[in-house]
Image (cartoon, rainbow, N blue to C red; front, side):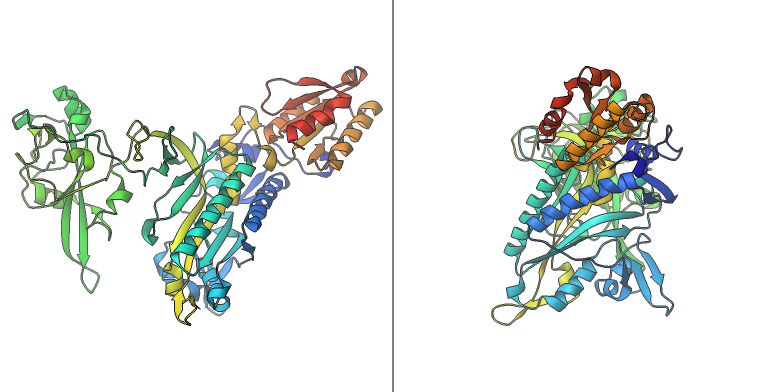
Length: 581
């Protein structure tokens, strides 16, 4: 490609509404143009990156035995009504009507459609396993789209869906997709981690997120540097930090703590470690009657160490809270504890509540907790002596850096990540709801075991930039750069020698299959170099009259601090080495 034939549109400043680095740089590099809130045009430079990402995904999916098809963006509502998601999914699901007043949706995902295909086409165990995938536009009506393409409303995803005869076979399909994803992200040239993830309301026990490592990432990734353990913070197990409960050594004392309603303030006042305090969180669960009104409520007291935070996903897995919970109202708190929030604790309750203690709290002795009276806390509190044992002991907290790894092979560390892929074992959630059955060897119908596997194609662009950039612009990995090599001739319009050498190098690299661009725009060197540093071309070769007289050119990798002089005759072999050709 020659620059004069392409479309290059860079900006010196990012638009005022661009918040994160990837949004700013994609706008400045002319890769995207905003059309509406969370909706972008992908300009030629950005589209080249998307196509390279898609090609890598497509090659590895095909190699893994998946079969490509294409499902529509607009889908009939009837399929979504079969699974109940038409009503259950919130306003993120864009619902529309056609001229006949029939309901349709603009798809955010395609489980229903692919299950409909499977129930019509996959009738026998002999046709299984099967894995269908597509790369398609999605739409989610985000309330507050932000961060450019990182949280847009319209985006591109690769979805794959596996169909198997039993759980064992579904497990093999899952492992096959997990391995394919590792190959995809290896080829994309991104630093990533595959982390165990929460399976959410769907259930099951197989789910992994693929997270691109970036300081600006939204997700906290928990990992052990000395083992293979990795999980997102929702799932990472928090082991008890105390091996056993010590014998009481202090008397229970009601201690004045005027105006000190947080554990940190109480610890500072009493000159005690924050880890000696216990915080109280009050939840409630509701039982509904036939008309949907609240018939009865249960109040729960969750106890965590003062320096720990509640993990709501873990709490939602505790028996009694699985059906959903809410934070208790002030009225409910005062009714059960006889005190306003800030001074709550498990001793001297006005009405009974269900008490859940975190694993570490269950082993604490002589701890500090609220006295259920404004401006007072208890010190020297002990289980069994001063209050009953908890109704339940459970892992309900977020892990913190330095916690022991659940696999016993070191301590945990935390880094930030951006989720760009997810592999998920679905089981029979959709096949059972939609009667997607096959006939086994005995002729009996059985629901197909399903898995789903997604990759955010356009999100990968944002994640790659968040991970790879500097003060000058984007630094693309070779595999997904819009152009891998840029040939920059200085004064090409004034020097036949420069022009001839540049065209010859350009054509030689083309013949080798290198994705090369010749910048023949006649720009000044500073402006030309600034454009390609902003756009993020991984390799740049500069030709000038002065250099050619000495038989030399300048090569500079995008991460290099300065250019390297090379003999003109050696530049192609040098690039072949860099590009591993």
